[in-house]
Amino acid sequence: MKLKKKFLEKSKKVAEERINILMNLAEKESNSGKTERSKNYVLLGKKIAMRMRMPYPKEWKRRICKNCGSFLIYGKNARVRTKAKNYPHVVITCLECNSITRIPIKTAKK
Image (cartoon, rainbow, N blue to C red; front, side, top):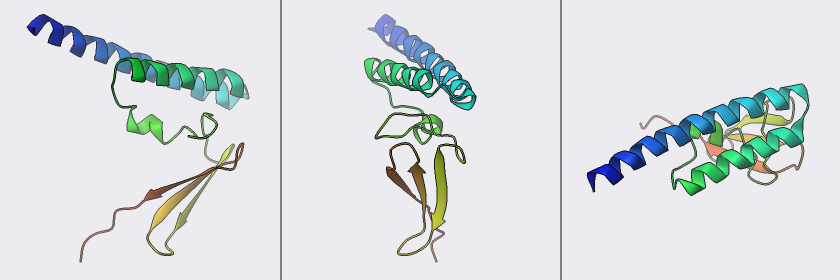
């Protein structure tokens, strides 16, 4: 049982490293204008995370469009706005598929 646990910990660490490598490659390809290749890298990273049953790293999760799967570069293919209408939140709009993601901003309690 201990061997299995050690193996799982080690394999999850390797999977996390591979996801980081793939996302860095996706960022480079998206900057150079090769969006299809960056989408493939994002898809591979998601498959690795699903296979290992681990959550996708939060730092990369918000950089991916949930609708079309493209890697979002703020200012190039994504628009970021802050709103404080009903509740303070950040609105990220993918300019390729026009999908909207809202992320709430935590406010200090009074």
